[in-house]
Length: 186
Image (cartoon, rainbow, N blue to C red; front, top):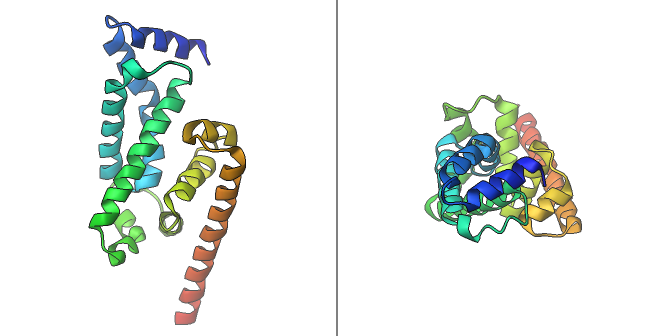
């Protein structure tokens, strides 16, 4: 644990310095947490809502935060749980046809700055089960070590490696099928 983390944890535990310390936590980790959430929920508006819920939960759970893990690990755990909960709630409200149009929703999102290839990758990632999608985004986009992902998700490194490997295979197959469908239409 870094000395900055130790100082922040100490400040968060004191009522007199809690608000200022939490503002520092939001400033230090907000953008990284946003992008982790965004890769799971995909759209800016949803990511923004989940990020706000994450920090509200973190604020209300400060008294139960023991400081045995890094602040970032604790926040990632809250954020990922919030994002996965959001996805589960969203799935209940979305038809299968709408789920298949992830690329179209992404390209229509004013905050999406990728191209068609990135949209296709995101569409392939969206087809993964929640755990595989989460492991893939943390490893591929954030380049996290398996040991860090293990701390956040509370899963063994071996299981995470297997999930990542399976996710990569599924994404590759999705992209291959997409290309094959395009070439058969031409």
